[in-house]
Figure 1 (cartoon, rainbow, N blue to C red):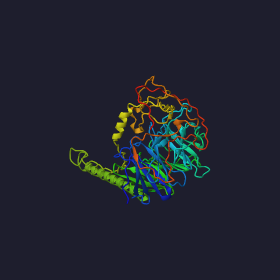
Figure 2 (figure 1 turned 90 degrees about the horizontal axis):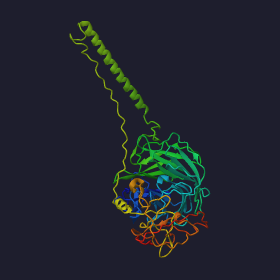
Figure 3 (figure 1 turned 135 degrees about the vertical axis):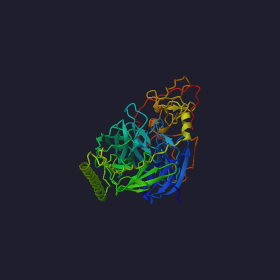
Figure 4 (figure 1 turned 180 degrees about the vertical axis):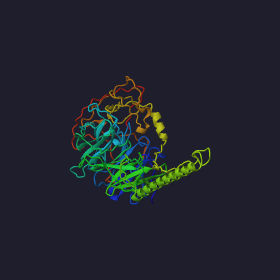
Length: 563
């Protein structure tokens, strides 16, 4: 039995290339905090077969309008076919691993560090259970003076997942978007390119190499080379899609349809227009896209009840699916491209213009002759005595058809009542220092769990961690001053592990409001523990030494807890 295509404002897609299908994940506006998943067959793109899989309700983590991205398991075979779900936000980024049966792991996050947007989260390599990314974050590292971090994620458990600001060459501080490319063979799988386009209209290619057995410098970027833009001007709504060695960009064309550009850094540093055959779907800034085999699959939400898929075949340069609009041959957002006007239409227009000109000339000559006869026969200047030029030249109006603009699909704005509740609670949240190690006063052991009641803040940058997503951020970046320090009961410090920085490895969020199906009890499935590994992968050595600052907690604040 097939179901209608689910409607989500900010979903994500993950490809199942073996079966020419994909996974659709999203949070419905009617289900607060409920992450849903479906399996979609692309055999009939006009009427895709949809099968609901599973869901997880977590009102503390999942939000309807927060941007999301999904990534397929990097290796060829895995019994659970895990998918990495990433939900972006200004203050917190939540992640979960979903298996092919729709079972989600508990949401995790990197404490104190958030990935800002899927437009600045470029996948640059994969190998085995791991994938590498270069991401723009909400934290400016005091050493590199940059908010770009290298990211390594394990798609099966939390072991070996790290972020680190030491990435070598730092990309621009004003990025528009970034798209990643990477090798397709085992020897080049963790080698790739981070292609970053800035707001000044330029682009840069940064060669990258991922590290499999380190907790620092998980990605190293080399010096950049400039992208030849070919006169292409990208908009702020452009959407990146990675297809292994080639990066694609979807953007709005001059006729309102979806334009495509591509770049293959291993072959050329030129950003190229992809000239399509036939129409294309109307561009929507909130549309999501994923590469599946040699196709690009897009999901577009038309209104609160309708959504549809489209596919672009990169071998035939042809779009398929519902709602195709636009001028065939369009390839950019500057009005260029091939014209679809036929030769017959051109000839017909020319003949029509000549007929109009001949008609005007005939009427003008005829009118002049009548006036000449009147002047000869009668005294005066007209056909009747005392009147002049009573035979006026008639007005001839030439009809010029107007160009009918292609209707632009507008993204509806949804009201999320949970959003308001979060804002009210967040107004009293405290500052948080991502470099601080918080200790349990009773157990005297290091915690990796954020306590929203703790008065802890970063003395350098005062990063205000209130746990809101990008679209919910109040005050447009105006944050209240940090709370004063209080002479509370001192903590019993315990030195951090010499192998890793707790702030650089993700940890589980609270389970207070989480529901969902338990993980299947089979020997292949590995239920991940906390994203904390004393040794990581192999035998890494802790390289980066940080100064940990712990602010005393006021005596009237509740004790820290260990969930």
